[in-house]
Image (cartoon, rainbow, N blue to C red; front, side, top):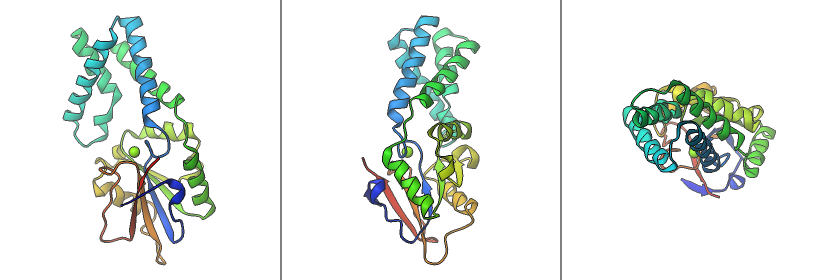
Length: 219
Ligand SMILES: [Mg+2]
């Protein structure tokens, strides 16, 4: 695995890019923190949930959902995080607040997403060289589609493969193999596949079948 900036990735003889989305093309942390703050504010004003209670119960609910849905897209479901969190706080399901929190979280998250400059440059270069890009991403398909729509990068991308679509999460090779098959099979004429992401534990596709170059993005 080579550690590079997006601008330093060699495009010669590159036939297909399997590209991560979150934290590779934009800053996840900025959006997530803004979204959590919006939800915390709403719950304080409308349900009298103190900030510390929110933090403690959010983390508890998140762990519970992760444990129940190990290695699947549902393990990232904010809807379940908020449902379980509110059920723990109030001892009953709060249908209105769960729905409001989920919608507020994602609308705030997406509003705060900004495409990295080098990501746009990389996408434009690939398009100019007719290099196919398939986004390979964990999480729910509808959420990832909304992110790509907001970033206005759909025109650069041929396909997306989400963990919800496939039923397994990265680094399960099935996700990457499915993406290669969906993209029309491995590149020919000596061209290789680039697997690009920010997470050395997730964005890994160690193939003996195909010519693959692994890139870990640093900023
Ligand atoms: Mg990532």
